[in-house]
Structures are given as C-alpha cells and as structure tokens.
Length: 133
Length: 133
Image 1 (cartoon, rainbow over the protein chains, first blue to last red):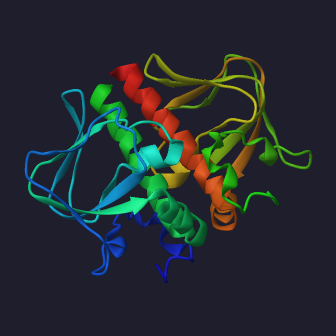
Image 2: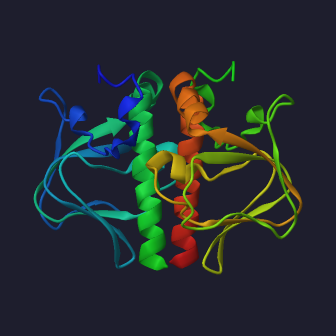
C-alpha cells in the first residue's frame, strides 16, 4: 500500500484491490456453487477475490457479479450489522479475508484505500437503485 | 476535527457531522418546498444540514428524511457521477457546503471522517435495498 497516500488518482474510478492479494496472505477456497455467506449472517471480515467469480444476491435478484481484485462483504465491517446480502461462488473461488482490525488499519493509514471502499459502496448504491428502480 | 484520529468510536454507529457546521463557515439557505438539487445534475460538493429537514427522493420514492448534522450529496463527490437522487427542502433549511477539495482533505487527515462517510453509504445501501426489496 506504499503508494496510496497521495490523492491524485481519486478520479480514476479505480476499485481494484489486487494490492491486498499478495503471495504471503492466508486464502480461503470455495467450490463453484457454494455459499460464501448468507444474508443475515453475523460477520467480522470482508473479502478480496484472488480468483474466480462471486455473485452477490438479495433474495433472487443479482446485485453484482464480481471477479478478481474486487471486494465484497465490506458492509458488515463498516456498520457492524449482519450480512446485507448473500454471496455465492459462481466458479471455484479463492478469497483473501480481511479482518476488521486490518480494515481499520488500512483506512487509517491509506486515505486512498478509504476512497476506494467509498467508491465501491457508491457503485453498489447506484446499482441497487437501478436494479430495483 | 481534532479528536477524530483515533479509531475507538468506530462501533458507535455515529453519523453525526455537526463538527462541520461551526460558526465561521459559509452557509446556504433553501425555502421549504424548494429543490436543492435534481437527480442527474452535475455536482462538485456535498452538504451538511445545519438546520431543517431534507428529503432524498428517487422518482417519487423517499429514500431518506434527514435532519441537522446529517450529510447528503456525498455520492457525487466519491464517484464523480451526476447526482444519484433529488434533494428537497421539507422545511426551511440551512446547509454547509463541503467542496471536493475539503472532502479529500478530511478523508486524508481524519480516518474517522472516512469511516463515518462509509457508514452513511452503508446505511443508504441497506435502506435502498429495503425500500425496493
């Protein structure tokens, strides 16, 4: 995250979190078709997708289809509420979990990380409004 | 913003931005019933409500009713897209505008501010999902 303390790239619309999926991190695997978490589950981590495709669903509506270097599960870290949607592995998936402690550290150390997370939330909000509008 | 650099109050669910509405700031007034901005407008600032009530609408659905110390209009600053919804003054309203430059400065200087903005976005996302779900 060394280059992230300047604000220049703010307008780049960058929501690539690949910097968090380096080689020396714990990863977690999910088989195609398996549930990563259910709406309503208690939660204390978010995920970066290292490989594979993840679908975010609310009831039977798809809110997002995400691939490598995208994050999901960040909502529950931010507001400490249960999972707001269900996440399903569309293909075999490898994930990097990010704990609340790591998340808060990154927000504190790298404003650019905070902006990227805000941008993801803003995109989801616009997409959700469109899906249901 | 002097006390905002520690992360302790993270779990307080605090979305009060009253610290930004001090006495020496520019304010803007809107009469009850007037439109503050329309969905689709270009945008380069967000607002903190100093007094009064603001309704956020998408088409004819109310997404939020906000009062003193709440923020709105932050979406367009974050993703540089047009206004995602319409904001209407329900009562006479006094607002403190926050420019993109001020916003980026606060995100960079005070991680707690960034977390609060994320929390607002997360709340709106949950509310939008409920409104349309």
